[in-house]
Image (cartoon, rainbow, N blue to C red; front, side, top):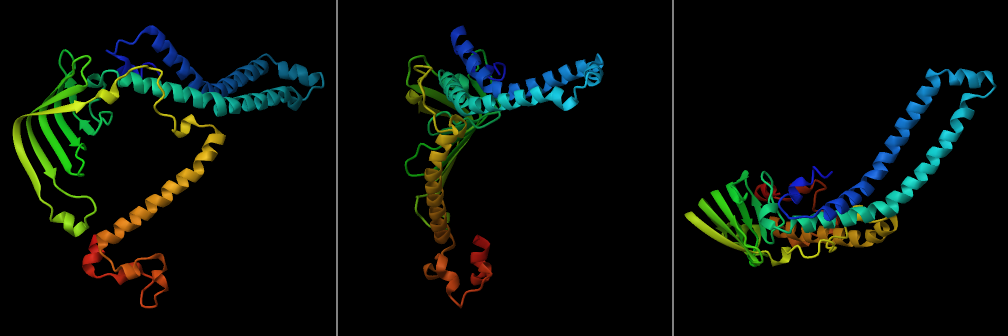
Length: 302
């Protein structure tokens, strides 16, 4: 577990105490998985040893049946199952809560070093960054950079690509500077709330550049206290009782998502609102085959 998390720890100035704390939480998380395997292997080894030394034959000759020999093991397994359940319901969520928050706080301590090549990095606020390789003495030089800029309040799509990039992050500064070289810039000037037809008519701008500089506000990523709890609603962090309490809010969010999705669909296909509501199938003029109620252009948009 420590080896898998090595990229998050390397170069962060983390002391041995924090690493031991991380391992302690990781051990608590691994215990419920290790206990059943341990019981299984120890049972196989014990019963195999008894069989190899003809202990079963001796007990059978003494009038003791095999079910009677295995009965204590069955009761022991039931006791371990109960203990493991209590552990999973109470200790495991606590360990996940502490370990994931500790790992996230460590990862954000130096954002310039937290970026991982080959996948989209979403830790930086309002930016998603992907690159192929990180190199250089300080590991702050990037190759083949792709950036989605989500900082615009107007909802514009802004995409930048560059052959090379350099990260400049001074200790104590609230900004991280990203310098892109030999790249391309594209921005789609769309406005929220427009129909699909109107969005297709919105203008866009694009340009090639030799050098482009981005200043990213990383004040919200200040590591601060490594024990700070920022994430607490992950399903792995909740007991059975807490999971049950989240069901109403999850259902409410799901219903809201479905309603918004339906509204967006109506605006996109520009269907007649008279026939767009759930009771529209009561209209005798509408076919049960929904697609036949639309012309060819609207079928293609669907």
